[in-house]
Image (cartoon, rainbow, N blue to C red; front, side):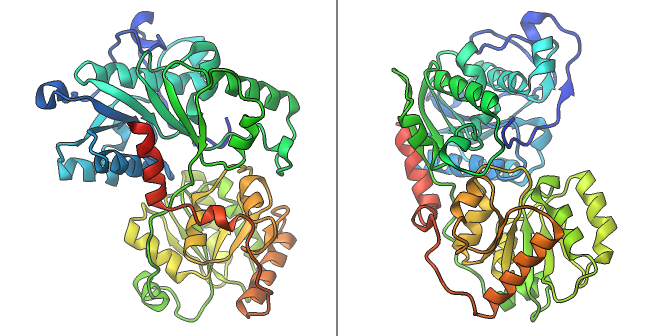
Length: 439
């Protein structure tokens, strides 16, 4: 699956096939463990826009939050549907605490995997089932006029053969990690001609799926590719910039004081969902036993394997890294990007867009970036910071040396490639684009 953070799965108990495993939204089904659904028909008498997102990790929850804001700001009523696992997530808690009449949270058991070989063999089929079950259950008490799927990469390739998981209900969606066209337009990605050919064919067929009003992509190269291969009666495919709120930077020294960072040292930020694909292991190994390197600031929730690696290797780094293994609220995020001098984007096997790149750009911070995929495409001329052709220790060391030159003011300033596109990555622009498709 292209750049998808796979949610944890629960195994379903034995159940009749027509209850647990049917994939289509036109079929009634019940799922054990679901929370009670609000009877929105009785309370409002109006139709609702329903955002379905089974995974609140990484940036997924932010997209849910921003789309929900776009809904209610445009005068629509909005249901946010996610898995029961995220009941304690700050976004879920905020929606419940605010208790707005036009914004509600529905928690369902979306991660239980039904029985059947097609679910066991295909992650796309599992996710498709999550979405279909969510709409079925919500529709029992709620009139849904539009579904929004913030991360349709989960199931999009199933549409060509199985059509929409939402039945006759209209829907819009965003895809974020489609990379099958990258090699053909010259981006640095693994060459997989047969896989890419198959996925491009499935994508083109999926664009004709029932009920799909508009598909959005945060990849600015995908609409151009699709324009040359667009099938008849396909839904529109539009670019929407990966957003970041219009937040002003904090005073760097005050931000460092709040984060308890050295006021005079240089700091390199590794930010987000901290896993192996962040390139954090290679970065820490490259910095081990070296001097005159920036202090690492590692901020974001870590998976278990990466946490064990960081705990084992952090004592080898001088200066010692600052580690914030936690959910990062907005004010702390602002302090992190204000306090740090550069941002690490040396990701491993990541070929799609990165919201962290947008954040670094908005705060005026240089990046140390992989030359692969869309990150490499945006940073291709080096004006946003040094590029990494690989994650070997010597390559990382050279990039950090180039960063030090930049900090000394010796680097020649240049117009960053893709700067005009990154300047469009505002939350206001994102909301207006989505609102136009909700009418």
